[in-house]
Image 1 (cartoon, rainbow, N blue to C red):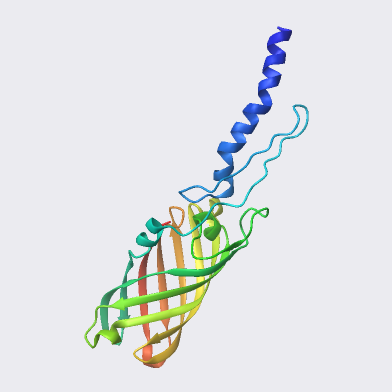
Image 2 (cartoon, rainbow, N blue to C red):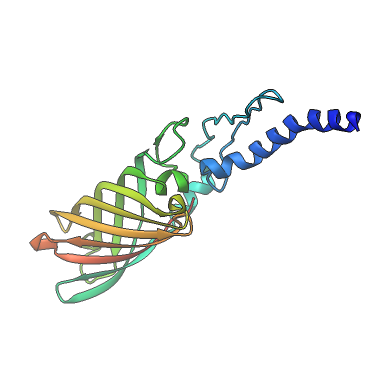
Length: 212
């Protein structure tokens, strides 16, 4: 019995390190490709602590290709309605809801939990509306700021967003305001954008689809 107890005591730190290593990415909100996490175990009789390391996030060709897939939307304005598509790009994001041991800054590539656990982002959003007119008049360009807030399970199950942007369309400038709600780790959501500027007055309902 004493020998069995000593053997179990020796295995305890190794088992704890393995458990922390496997659980680290889930606790820190890793992207589907998985940021790397390092787990450190203390002495057998002391407390155990996990040390998080910066995730290995970089632009890759597969990621760039899936970003070309747009989100469908319905544009409503001036007594008419037309279908369109929208793309999303995030040049810069600051997360205020992630692990404080990690850098809160992201550029272009953002893990789902880093965004939906609470963050503030700069975004660009080109849109194409299938309406009559010249090809150049069918495009809308937006650039602005959007804030995300978690609602359920740190934003994994449900989160929301509020934002504002400048809009350029048909050689005119205006302002837009938006609200959104998201689920499935932020992969699926709905956004409603309204533009009160008289010359560009419209409402857009977007089925937001994000690929990570």
